[in-house]
Length: 322
Image 1 (cartoon, rainbow, N blue to C red):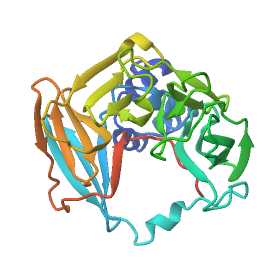
Image 2: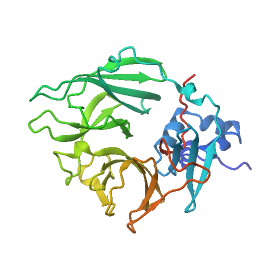
Image 3: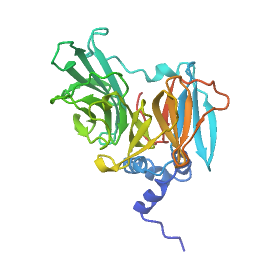
Image 4: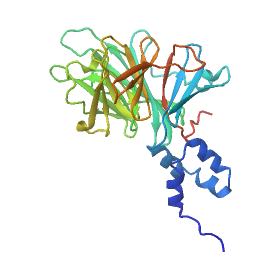
């Protein structure tokens, strides 16, 4: 007697808990599984699963790539062997709508739009003014590039003042690109704004209760453990939004050392307690939140300095660049 097959919804739930590489292997075991595990429904279910291990990817000054994965409380590093021209394979065309280079300022963000199954780039550019008693940022333009459609388009502008001390890349969390900005009301309070890919408009995200409303525009925004993170590099305070969009869900820890670490961005968590950060000297540091201990991070076979990097989770979503 043939064994009864599990319902499709149970199979999707089980397979969505596996790493992307394991799912790829399962696709090779049968035509039925290959079809099931390649459906848009399953791919989105796998992408939304929050239990997948976060890994670290680092770019050296010579454009080499290294990945670092945590396996049973240990870390394994690996250099990725890629074609020498890998940077050109993902080149995005310049926007025909872009402002004149040298006469304007711009910030960028990159992320995946789960609703349209498309990778997108958003560019926020503006001319600056030095007129007293007027916003520093005027005539803002927001352009969005669709990787799937290969086109740029201009969307509704932002109502916030985006003339900030650092023109950083936006932090992508929960389907939106986030930046620090200033409000237009009296006093120009600091705000966290999000450009939502679903409706392509800007919304305001509640800031931590104890953040200095007049000054946190000078902080750094990033992603840590898949959550929105804000860092005050001066006090070395770190806030993490545990539940997206909920003001009271911000948690905080401080890196208590008597010298300036020069933190430039958050990278990822190793396990549940250790947070990895990059510094302005392009070094890696690891802070144990529970023990309050700080140490440097060395990657086997790699140079001491890194040009850039970030965290990633294996995904079944294709970039659709070709």
